[in-house]
Image (cartoon, rainbow, N blue to C red; front, side):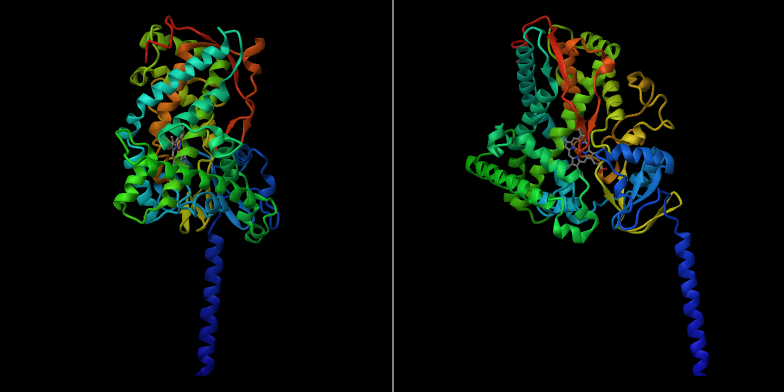
Length: 503
Ligand code: HEM
């Protein structure tokens, strides 16, 4: 009898082992290039990973598997595949991977952008969409945007000295976007030296760079402890700068007391904190984490998109002329552009869409994370994989777009495609649960600033440069900006003295 049971047990175990092997074999991972032992595919990434991934996907397909150290990565590079990950199976992939940057730069994942999917993130997201980024809130900052833009036009006019001198548009637009973000978040402008002797943008960009650069500590936990790249040290240093500065901002708001009519974002969060109305524990750490989210998400994204749009227009004088003609018809040369004009500027809208298609400024969105095993498009996607959606590759996919490398705003005539996450061939703001909650504000800023600049000024490349000579090299980060600043000679073209009419 004993022998009988030993035989039965052996047969059952063997069958289970065979079944396991069979199932494992059946779990077909997505295709990908051959990797190295231990490193996996890390060595295949250069300083422009979005372009490397686009090249590799052309060879291995729209759902590709890469291993970075111990971490599995799924690279998504077509509209159809993006729809599967961000819509059909959105819930499975709605989390963010754990990474060192989120630990050190976001008060231990207290923020929205790096937050793990769960009740806390859902509440935080609700608070941000309903209280901080609602249409009502965005509209309450309209007078501030008008005033800042008025000052900006004056500054460009002064610097160009009657249209004779080249102006650094990249620097000026980035400064305008930073000022607008400061007003919105803090309720006042801060000077560079208020945060650190290296200045505001430097510190924000250092944080963004540290969050985007491949960090060995994320892929090999042991190396994280040794910090061979020195990233942890840099993260801690920049986090301290943010923390000290944000503490001062909160103290200033506490001292100021009455929050008045137009509440800035810190005011709104302080009211929520003091009222105890939040559906979760909400303290100064949360206020600081959201402050950083709002600042970093709004400053560079809009400014870089505007840079790319102006670069493309300078490369395509025909398109520039068409935008100006439309502005002349809708606005006229006797006044500046108002936000209420934007709805009527259809060609400008196409220019902005075409810019987003070629230059989604967050080309790899933010990484998503699989919360359970899943089968997508016939491939096995293991739990705890990073999902990287390559929005730039999707925007340039010849299966979705004809002449994909060319800037042709007219391609949108009669086509019902927008950037709001419903049309997966164009997803500069992502889509689904993790899609950008600041989309509306981002679109207003981009359209308004491009429209105002092109309406108020004739822009020319400096030193007789031909359009095709303009350097379009990209610099990778969480936000991809121009590697070289955009210079142009602006000549004021309105028929009034711009300082008085709109104010
Ligand atoms: C041109 C402007 C902008 C672009 C192109 C942009 C793009 C994006 C992208 C691609 C994502 C990631 C989506 C994903 O992972 O699937 C994102 C997330 C986010 N964006 Fe934006 N964004 C812009 C402006 C803004 C503004 C103005 C704000 C707020 C002030 C903002 C706040 C956020 C936040 C908080 C997240 C994280 C959402 C989450 O993880 O739940 N963005 N944005």
